Image (cartoon, rainbow, N blue to C red; front, side):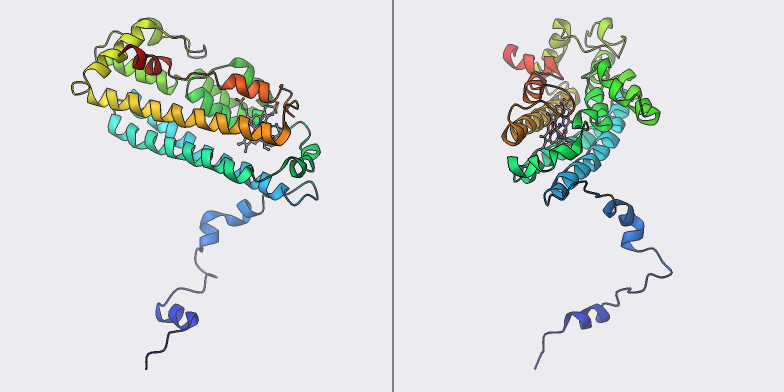
Length: 282
Ligand code: HEM
Ligand SMILES: N[C@@H](CC(=O)c1ccccc1NC=O)C(=O)O
C-alpha cells in the first residue's frame, strides 16, 4: 500500500541543501537581517508596524521604479524604443501595485492612526527623496521641493540630478523631433529645471502620430505607454488623498501643508498634457 510521504522524507528525497554554514543562503543574498531589522516602532501602538511596513515597501517599489525609469529615459534618448517600452510597462505595473497597496493601509482607522501620529513629529511623505526623484523624472519640476533634502547632501545630490535632467517627456519630444516631426526648439533645448509648458506645436506633432499609427507605430506606442503611466499615477494620487481624508480628515499635515487641500491640488498636475489634449482634437 502507498503511504503518503512525510514532509521531512520529501525534503530528504529531493536532496535539498540544508547546511549553509559554508555557502550563501537566501537570507544572506537578500540581506534580510538589514531589511527585517529596520522596523523600529516608536509608539506602543499595534498598528505602527503596518504604517512602517507600508512605507518601507513603498520606498522599495519606488527604488525599482526609479531604476527602470532612469534606464527607460536613457533608452528613449538613444532611440532604443523596444527596451524603453519594456521598462515603462514595468513602471506602470509597479505604480498599479502601489495603487492597490492603499487597500491595506485603509484598514487603519482614525483612532488607530491617532495613536501613532504624535510619534511621527515633523516627518512626512513630503520629504521622500525617491518620490521627488520620480516626480522630477516625470517632469513635475519645482525647485522648492529640493529644500527638505538640504540637511542630507547625499540625498540632495540625487534629487538635484533628477531636477536638472531632462524628464521622460522631454526625451520623448526630442525623439519626435529626431523623427522629423516639427517640435519647437523651445521644447527640445531648454532649461530642464523649469516646469513643462504646454505647446500647440507639440500637440500637432502628437496628432500627426495618432492620425497615422501605422506609419509612426513606435511613437504611437510610446504615447500610449506614457498614457498608461500617467493614468496609474493619477490613481495613486487619488487613493492617497482619499485615504488621508478618511484617516485624518482635514487636519494639517505633519509636513506643514494644509493636508488634504494640498494633496487635492496635486490631483490637477498633468504630466504629459498634449498626450491628453490630442484625444479631444483627434
Ligand atoms: C495614514 C496614512 C497617510 C497619511 C495620513 C498621509 C498624509 C499626508 C499628508 C497630509 C501629506 C501632505 C504633506 C504634509 O503636510 O505632511 C502627505 C504627503 C505625501 N505622502 Fe502621505 N500620508 C499617508 C500615507 C502615505 C503613504 C503610504 C505614502 C507612500 C509612500 C505616502 C507618501 C506621501 C508623499 C510622497 C507625499 C508628498 C506628495 C506630494 O508632494 O505631492 N503617504 N501625506
Ligand atoms: N503627513 C502625515 C504623516 C505621514 O503620513 C508620514 C509620516 C512619516 C512617514 C511617512 C508618512 N507618510 C506619508 O506622508 C500626517 O500628517 O499625518
